[in-house]
Length: 369
Image 1 (cartoon, rainbow, N blue to C red):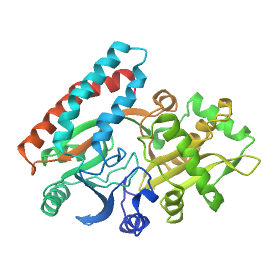
Image 2: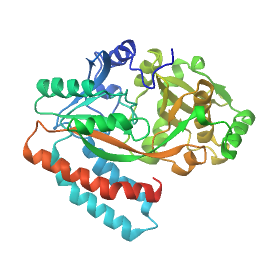
Image 3: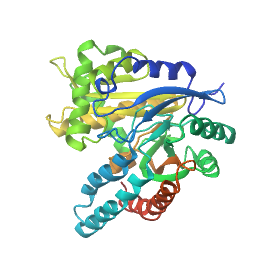
Image 4: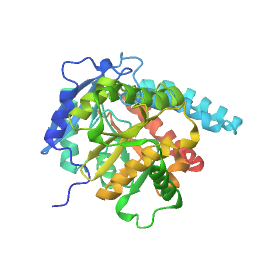
């Protein structure tokens, strides 16, 4: 039988929740406070996270305020060559900040949250959505319900079902999807990446080659790229987290090892049904750029997708790089249910949805972010 696009098997969800049992969250993800649990709806298991409105400093995977205000302001660095536009965007974000805080969506139950930047969502039927909405609003009457990582290609039907059930759909970012089953002729850039892998002086490290010493180095390499080079608003995954996810069989780790035995690049892959994501990418940013470490670990992930015929969600960022490797841009949404909350929160959320749809989407598409 053909595997589901996103499976969320009960065993898989249980193993994920067990990673966070009896360990403070910040020992696993250093810039996050959250409680991890699970629910079963219409026979399907989902990890869920619970967040309080007074949990300050959380990274965007559990805090929409961080995602839509702090992270959005940080992203305006892409508009340095358009200073007037950059100022206008920052002004608009600042004007929307009070509305977003008034919506109260940082006080939330987040459904299907695997605590990655991208959490592929199983197809949600009308009955499943109604059960989620009714059960969770009864259990948590003061919290918004949130589902991230919905896109218009993989989740078109689910987005319509959620809207019909009263969820607001907030545009979040532009992501890139690679359908391995449709790739019959690799691009020139893809061919160059494979040539680099074949010629590199570094040793290719498979999932089974990972040693105890590699977890700390992998966390360091991830931090060099996503925290130091990009932004500390990204989730700060620790060595303990990588170790537990790897041992639990939830994350494949692969990379490149130098002659001295140390990893110089790493990637962590999460496969769920027929969908592949790449939540961990890191490399030694002090090494010469011409080594091509980033493109080689990206090629490793794309090769796995092609070998297994997977749908590879390459997430956001590095837009031109991903386009040149046959990934297609698509808008990603966060669905929020707040109909059970006060009028002020509902009104603020409605305005935010309108602004993001009318202003945010055109900007994402125009500048290829």
